Length: 387
Ligand SMILES: NC(=O)c1ccc[n+]([C@@H]2O[C@H](COP(=O)([O-])OP(=O)(O)OC[C@H]3O[C@@H](n4cnc5c(N)ncnc54)[C@H](O)[C@@H]3O)[C@@H](O)[C@H]2O)c1
Ligand SMILES: O=C(O)[C@H](O)[C@H](O)COP(=O)(O)O
Image 1 (cartoon, rainbow, N blue to C red):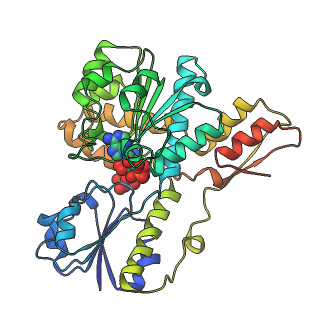
Image 2: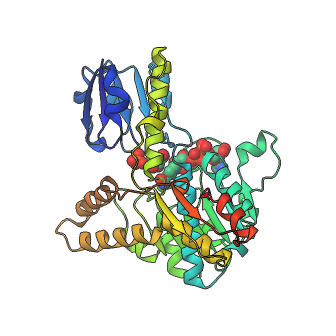
Image 3: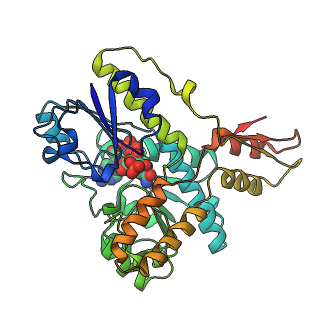
């Protein structure tokens, strides 16, 4: 069997080499000619998988080691009888940690308490529901908008216009869809962006085209009360430097880029592949995951709960670091002879050379018996291991 894969997929050899020959390519550069004798294609989110790429190739199984599937032409793949698998929820925890880091940072910069802001979550699936549960456990009020779940009869959801009218923070976790009653392309256009509350924070870590970038830039040119954190960009890997300059936080599509999230993505696709072949799993992530990046944080006898939670969250992920690297890249791209090309390359380089980032359960926290019950509850809600 010949397996062709994106070279950004970790543990590829460990999981797949027993199944045949492996060839790797940079995901954005993969072409039909590379697949002429391939049986299996393994991608991440940057390879557009459609008829143009696959027709005329022997590929029968496509796996994307990502949550999002908007880069796959699912209708054509189904009509061609090609088996497709994605990795639901694989990096959801990383995204939650990104959102928490945005909240801490924006609170610090605006002098507000993030715990007292009402957080509106748009799209309450794998990521949105984990975020909602974490915030609720931290005592934060949330508003949830998911018309598909509401239409299925589930209680507890509000409409988008009501959410925009009531939420101090809007965090977006919808899939990108271009058609249908609840299409999300340009879900946030000029009118909805203008309807954000005075002083609102808007966080988008879903897909760039969910927000109309032109409209956002226009709204931000008129309203300096808003704080916007963008992890995803309408034309990425090309980023509008003028829009980034108006954003409070700008990162290169790395919200879910924990090593753990990427590894789970590979494992989930390996398992789907074994199921497709009708074979048992030979490998388990628990036996293969690298033992790097674990850390320990010792907290003083009875630290203030707010301070300790912030310290622990920042030990696992600090969005300010990604923001700084992105702004440096954009600044350098501006001075390059072809700044658009330099931006595209720089954006992908930041993602390819992403620093080691482990998730909250990999940080163990030493707490004394004098630590408050609130602090223990909060740290556990955020996923930390306590002892
Ligand atoms: N930036 C990153 O690193 C990163 C990481 C993971 C996922 N993502 C993106 O986030 C998206 C969401 O991830 P997920 O795992 O929660 O997906 P999911 O499919 O589990 O959940 C999406 C939810 O959005 C809801 N939804 C669909 N259309 C909607 C609309 N118009 N309004 C409100 N809700 C709507 C769905 O009903 C569903 O419950 C992914 O599709 C992916 O594009 C980005
Ligand atoms: O959909 C996802 O899972 C995320 O957007 C994922 O982090 C994208 O990472 P990439 O495939 O671009 O490496």
